[in-house]
Length: 531
Image: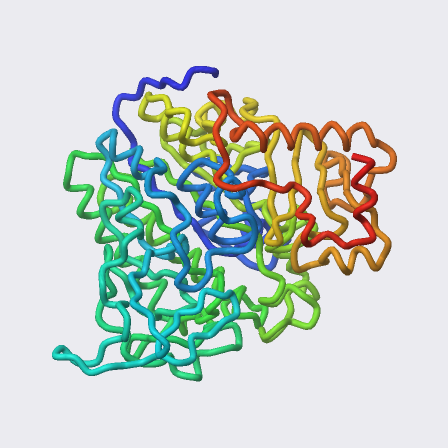
């Protein structure tokens, strides 16, 4: 199907349930041999379509969220590696069309409930007593609290309206947290904190896979409230919208199973793995089931496209590695592999970093119990929405988005030949058909950094035949140098024209270095001449 125009009797509601750090192998419908059971995901799979070759655009959080909402590869933005830092600047430009902004043009009501992590636009008036340092591992350890006529307030302006949060990027309504394991520890509704975060986070909530940074918190703040709150807020929103005529887009970016690993009592130990991450996956699945139940209860399930996806793979430090991290027991020795059969974890250019669980249900359009093995990407939501409403995106929007509508109707349709992958360190990989080229000697992330790979004498690049070797165990770069050069040329072209879909070339927001020379081991630099 080449046309972007689709005739539908009624515009569907769209619910996008977006979990945080859940691996491909953590969904039991994708990994029946795994030890974690996800009955609500399994239900969605029976009623909809499983995508077995779905990928996030990045192996880490904020960049993937950028791509979901803009239909654009994250590395085209100003963020070339890493994530949006604590109190960080907004990543989505004010003039960029987003999925909710586009859907609003077509009569949709839009809401975001959950984790944002794309920059709120905090309006700080910082001085020497209050410096919200933006570094990833920096702790704002001196916070001036001052007395005001309304009680204690944070010096600066945590209590002022944010300038660039979700309601300034296309959403009519927002309720959530910025980053659950970073300050400020409070709920945010639309553009204001709910109450005044007037205390320090209690020390008992720091470390041990809970909070990562000290900072301002609401009195009596606790992390166990997050998931039940998202479920209640989603239920209330679905009920409200079901009583109206307009279609709605509900974006539900969960705070789990990412840290903080705070599990509500009824789910502790439920996985049987003595691992809080595994228990939190089960609680997350339960919340998803409650959202499905809300759609049924209020009579809108039959006209709602539900998409479940993860922002990247599982993090090795929550119990996947052999020493168990700070969790009670590692999962792999117990027979559960969060990345399934794929190599690597969150942060990596290897598939375990970005191959994600992805399932869609749309009654009357998607055949129940179907499976699609074609390449899809998180950036594809925007073009899918455009085809749903029968419109064409402007050239300056959705530059890397391809509609999934043909796959919804025929899972054997081919919508894209290639996907560009990106690691936490800014390392590139490209999948083209069944070939995958990784432009670094290691994982590009935490599993095996370039320095470690260089010490082992590994070659500069990796080439894998994903059809014959989906676990990326046999590097074929020396056997197929022509394939290596071919994929590098393709990647360079996709970078230079500012898009990977048909349309007028666009400019990237910053210069893009596909090799990340500043992090490349010196002993490998001479090998660049070969390419």
